[in-house]
Length: 199
Image (cartoon, helix red, strand yellow):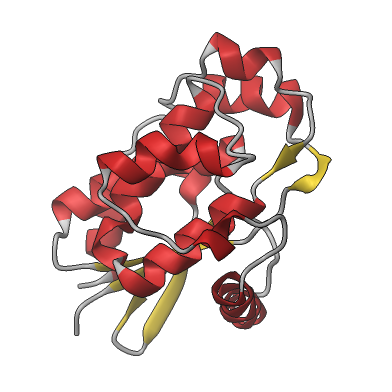
C-alpha cells in the first residue's frame, strides 16, 4: 500500500507555515507518498494568530518571518480566497498543491501578501501556469472549498481533535496522528519517525 499523508492547515496560520518544512522533507524522502493538503479556512477576517504566535513559531521552528508580515501580525486575516484556490487546485492539479502552498506561504509570511483580492494572486498564477475560475476570488467559500470542509470534519471526528495544523499518516489499515510539534526545529527527523510507522 502507498502511504498517504493528510495535512489540515490554514494558509494564514503561522504554525501551519512552521509545519510545512515537515511535508517538504517527507515528499523528498517518500516521492511515492500521496500528500493531501486540506485548507480548513479558519481565518475569515474576524481575527488573526497575532504577534505572539508568530514569535513562538519563529523560535520553535526552522521558518523565518519577514518584517512586512510581522508589522501586521495582529491585523485580522482572511484566508477564504486562498482556501478556494487550494480546494480547486487539489481537485484539478493535486501534483502542484504542495509547491503552490510553499510559494503562497512564503509570499504571505515573508513578503506580507494578504491574499485578500484577485490581484494578490496574479504572480502566483503566472508562476505556476494556473487558470482558476473567477468564482475562486469571491469573499465566500466555493463549493469545492465547502466539500473540503466536509472531508476535514470527517477526518477530525476520526482523529478526535479539531486542532490544526494536523498531520495524519495512513498506511494500509493503520492511521496515526503525527506529533508535528516534536519535529518543528528539525524537519528531517520526521522522516525516520514515518519510516518506523510504515514498516
